[in-house]
Length: 78
Figure (cartoon, one colour):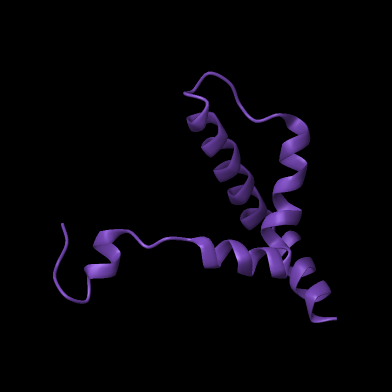
């Protein structure tokens, strides 16, 4: 039951959904050397994948910390 509530609260947040879609489209655009955008049918997969609880946890665990962020506790970074 909590998975359903989690997904409803997140997916029904228009600001969060818009930002996730913008980020996905922007990343595809940059990957394709600014030549073309994301296919429309792929955009329909962004929110269910990003906001499904298990998928969100899996994606977050794959996020890497930059060298500056990981060393911040030891020294100041520019």
